[in-house]
Image (cartoon, rainbow, N blue to C red; front, side):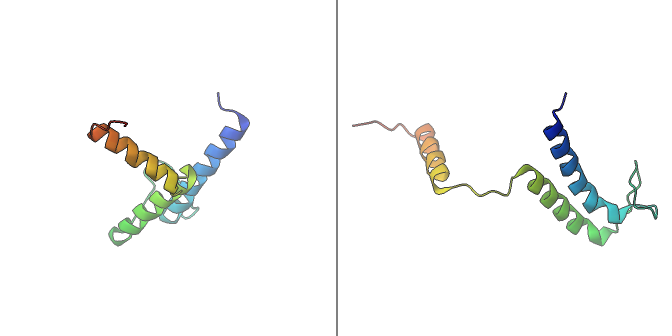
Length: 87
């Protein structure tokens, strides 16, 4: 069962994606149902980019890694790839 805050966040994430899709709704009301999308072929690349942006914004995937996080990932990768001895 979802908590109230989780349910609201999930609804907001869903609304971001639906906002991207609504202009392509087949009916005039703008409501979306199964099989209701009509996307012109030339609009598909833009639609994909807009959907990726909406999903990334809702998951926080756009956040950049800090220098410290990058350093730790690099050190871990080097330790995994090479035998590093402490002196």
